[in-house]
Every structure is written in structure tokens, then in C-alpha cells.
Image (tube, rainbow, N blue to C red):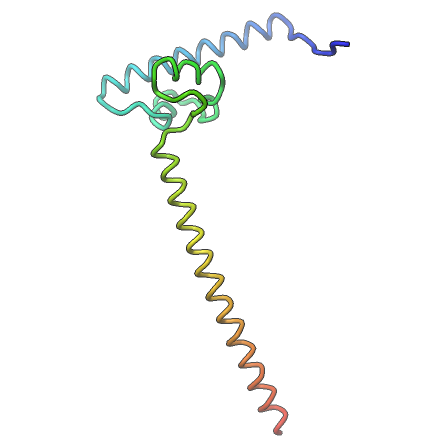
Length: 124
């Protein structure tokens, strides 16, 4: 039993129109970016088109970018963005490790102070 529903024709037309509009925006943006002498990347395309970053993972846009040689098949983000994310992630990991070490030292110091306080209060 096939329970897959089909969309109404008007909705299909509207979706196809939106798809074409986004393709046209991307093509215009690529042209404009090249004319400005800038590097074509997902980040600059988002800036020029006003489309959200998620649009560039849609099959029709990804296929367009692959056809024009701006991304590899299966990749939708630019390498510089991936490198930045990796660096930020490793920086955050280092900060977290430093904070954990500091927290452990403070907990030890707190335990020592509790011990001293106990000794002082028990003498009286």
C-alpha cells in the first residue's frame, strides 16, 4: 500500500517558483561576487543573496554550486569556515580543561580550609 500523498498542483507550482528564484539569486550573486574580484564562498553567497545558509544544502542549490565548481560533491561549506570551527572548538576545549583544573585546585583548597576550620572550632 502506497500512502505517499501528492501535493496540490498550486503548491507544487509555488515551490518550483521559489526554487527558481533561489537559483537565480545564487547565479546573480556568483556573477556579482566575481565582478568585485572576491572569492566565491558560501559565506559571501549568503551575504549577497540574503538567503539563509541552510538553503545552500538543498539539492538544487548544491548541484548548481558543484556544476560551477564552487563546492565538491557532498560538501556545502567552505574550507575556511571548517578550519575556523575546528580552531574555535579546540580553543574552547583548552579553556574547558583549564577551568576544570582550576576547579579541582579550588575544591582541594576548600577541603583544606574546612579541615583547618574544624580543627580551630574543635579546640574551643
